[in-house]
Image 1 (cartoon, rainbow, N blue to C red):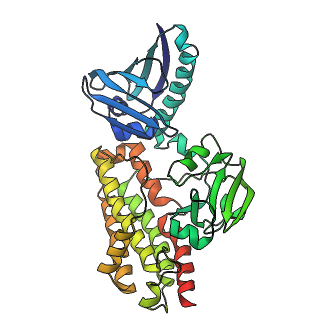
Image 2 (image 1 turned 30 degrees about the vertical axis):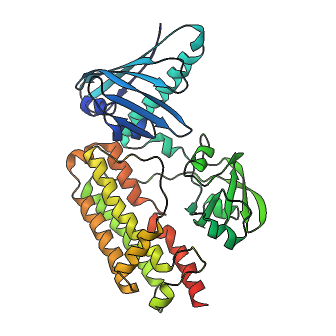
Image 3 (image 1 turned 60 degrees about the vertical axis):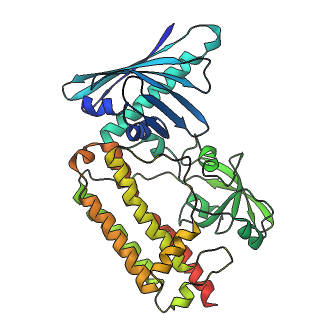
Length: 399
């Protein structure tokens, strides 16, 4: 038996460091993309990474704040292996030692070194998340500057696109790689950096795995029936400065929201309710349905924040799709421009009020709090990203 060892000192309490190995939300913030755990001896552990790598097993031993031992069995390993995590307090900091026992027979050739490299990288990310809140996997990931949209059969026929799989764009963001290389709304991306792009939520993230800002890649897409290929320079990702104070975070976020709401509301000046409810193409949203989608986003924010605070963040197999009946229902309940815009403002007020009331113990959990804060402080956040779509939809309705 060979033992792979990795060790690091984290400037965070041992209690938080222990939690990072026993709480599903915390595990997602530094180790994997999805986790579900039941932290007691015999309780399940399941970790999944994009690209269909996963490992499952169960906890063997837990000593609160000091030691975690679990057995896992990945879909790429010959047999289960055991991992022991030891956490020791060093004057307010925590020393983390990880020992991964791996068989040393021929079937495991090369595995120990691979495990060691992965654990060293992951522990560096654990340190970053617990000390600064920043997930290095996100910080190092490039930005594309695209607004993904649905790609239905109706849209395919209306646009004249000869393929049924791909990523249709609702728009692109100013100054980012997608706009600079010439991509625009209703383009359907079918290949990215040599990877085929399907209509599912994961093919594009998988295609950019390992890429960094400044890299140049080829993108193939359909504009109508014509297939084009361009070179895109990936945009470096700016990481927002998140204050670790709930009231201050809400104050800064309010500035972003107010600016975005003012611009969005200005789009509807001189517009009739009939024009705001008009659909530019069959199967596409009206301007008010786009607003309804934004309202839905704020409502989801409340559910998302509750899950993180509670430590039981919802687990899904993807990002889901936009359910047309939901946006229709919101418009039906608020059947005018005035009512819809007022409902959007109410939803924003609730998001900011909830942010102000975040418990202090959650603020101290920097990984989760930073994730929430960065969601609010992104320069091209949800409202801003869809304002261009609203302008285009209303322009089509006026013709």
